[in-house]
Length: 81
Image (tube, rainbow, N blue to C red; front, side, top):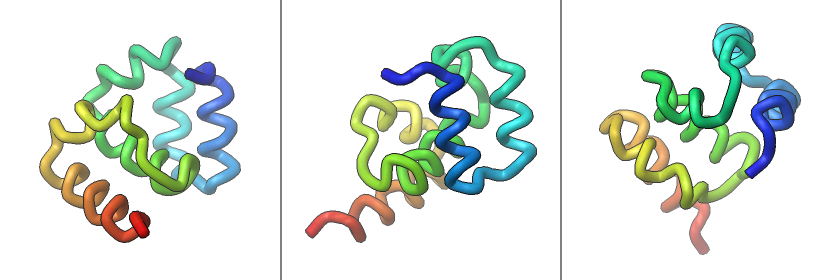
């Protein structure tokens, strides 16, 4: 997995919201990101806007939030050909 710094730079290039970037920059590791209360939101956004596809390793975290899980599943369903 990429470093947190690289992931934040990719998110910036994909026009992530400034507030989320500021919060992410306060964290020290990807593990901290994955445990954060906003992780499902951030991860589902990252999958759609940076990875542009499924993020299998992070799906358990996305599933913890019904709203973001539904958005993620809708996105994944639309990208599967």
